[in-house]
Image 1 (cartoon, one colour):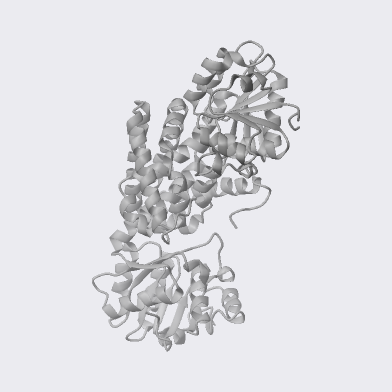
Image 2 (cartoon, each protein chain N blue to C red):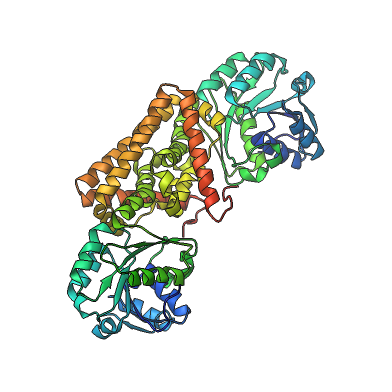
Length: 293
Length: 293
């Protein structure tokens, strides 16, 4: 299902993701306006047809007219914005977001909005190593997952509209998870992997051995270049889930450490077979074809 | 410096790496013979011009005639072979290898060979996720590191000849490390990364969360499909170095765990900045251009 073409769509925060949302929607003929504190981003987006209307200050007309608003801000900025301007949304407006952590903001945002204005959270699992609306590119959504994160307070209508954002932008797979399950999943597949990449770069060895790295080390540290302002906020907001994923991973490595220490060859091979089988299944799931061969 | 064109070159073990050595040398007009226990591999290599002569049993004429022999066998098979046939090499012959671990074999091989036959170890840090001479492809060496691993017993002549193998095959970077330093390096950049990829796949979470994985998880587990016979042997032969690298990594993750637990935001950002800076430097070192942007 795609979004209704008559909706007034507002994007708040016109960075890489907000910009890619705006561009993807505008390219398909939707009416898109945007608010961003940076006048240059708004000017660029207007000049390049990324949005129809835009404002560098919070223009209350754009807020009042919005049928659907998507927030692409740092979590604490998102909370501040809703605290200040949330009351200006019209009755029936649907609010969504792109925030990478959920439990810590979803209930708070829902609590702050006036009755008749519904917040339905979503997480587009897409990104690039570059920033800003100038790098916006809706093709980053094509291979990515889009997760709707509803609570008991959400209605069928807003959940469907939220899914329609994902469909309209062309995400490969659209699914739904409650906030807690979402945060645990993100703690594992995204935050833990960034922690691992970081630890490989920050542990004492990496400084001296960089000359000898091959593809394996390169693959495992590709995401070690990390925006410390955004990621430290995301890590802290998902602290308990991430700590628990780190503990689970270290426990598994401890187990492998003992297997190796005891020269338990069969135990070692068993772990290798399990790893191989799971990764092979995972390759198969991706478009039904094997990507590693 | 390239290898002398008049050398009789023998490859023992005609799998992916042995086959790629043979092909790379034969393509440049070198005389290459091979021994492999699998008659089909030899037949394929002869039929497709990968080698000039070949034998599926150990043909002592090929051994006696070799000026340079390169062993591409599992470590324990390599040791057995030298124990049985090492005495048949002629005076002045130079022996090299492609084994991924060194301390545990280099001194033993040198001890077993007759006087006048010199073993100089090398490690081509290249590979593919496929096996056998049919997949051999010397282009895998182009972006790879080639490491000569000399001991005090090696002569200048054999070290130079060993480096010339790497140059002739077109490796990107040729360097030298003593056995212990080599094994520590491999324990970190190759074996630890495989351990991490495995643990991500074998810890309990991965079974359920495979549907949500994005590029990060995909990158970090690409090498989790692992040949358990070869890798369990390599892990065990490098046990102490690998255990120590695993401990160093877990210590770093423990440290990050405490930083997060204590909500030490500045400490967290500091680690992120260090990780980013080191990875950026590392991108720069590769051909002087940034590969992630």
